[in-house]
Image 1 (cartoon, rainbow, N blue to C red):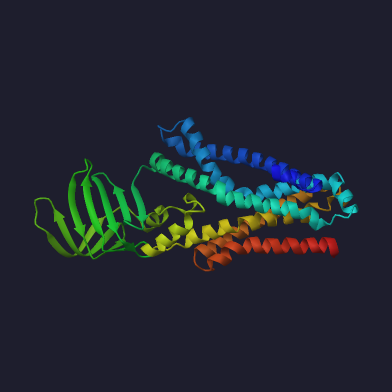
Image 2 (image 1 turned 120 degrees about the horizontal axis):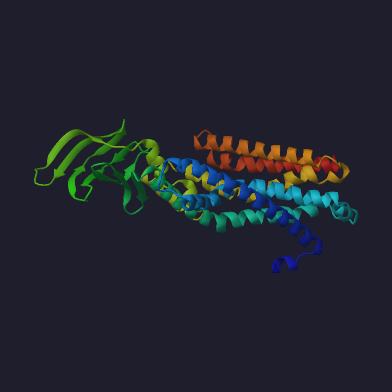
Length: 369
């Protein structure tokens, strides 16, 4: 607020109108998404007796920050459209432009405000959303699925996999793995009973996962009160799948913007594919540009609305369709990036860059064309 007081009167007024519009849209979308999450978790909890309404509301609250994080482009788009529509229909923009203020002088504070919102989101609010997402994943896994496995990776201790079964639990340690998570180098398997009593230890040259089994090569088995056994090959049953191992290695959404670079480096040192995490980090970096482009996109629909009275609903419908088109294209491009078909930087930055250039070109056409 102190910074706003130092700005020119018109700039302060424009920013205030934009923030009010974005705040209103944020409140409405939050209410809608919270209701949807509660309904979804009620459906999921229908067959679980120990999950009550209080826990369902807790699930929805923990998941809300990550859900809203994906909707911020819509918040800025619709907030910008609300603010610019009001200013256009009240002829305030006409008066400002008659006084010699160009359209770019009007849009610049709004664009910069959107970029600042994006910077705050990725540096301040994203760590909170990541922490709550991690809590949600742990709680949902325990309540809905039961704790079947736990997978962690550390620069100092390597890769650890813990799997719980009816007989007890099994802990697997390895210093590196393949990028697909299907093979481990120099793994050690520890087997314990349900009472945490030691059963056996297996040291192997390598372990390969296939068809719910670990196939060990050159294994050495150590058990209590028995001589060591050496086996050229050995099969160890498991419930883990390749997808579970990859997905359990701290999903990108559960890591904050500040933690991602170090974790990406750690995954790559451990032999895992960090493509999804690198794509997510670059997508966060592009968020300020994406939000700024949403303001420009809103302006292309609403800046000259005063000469087209009676079509407000049509304009908002067109803006909504444009927003969904951008959302769809972003998902498609990121899917190609996750699959390795596109470079990570290109997949993460293309939607924001293309939207920005398209909106700027449209504004030049409306003003000077």
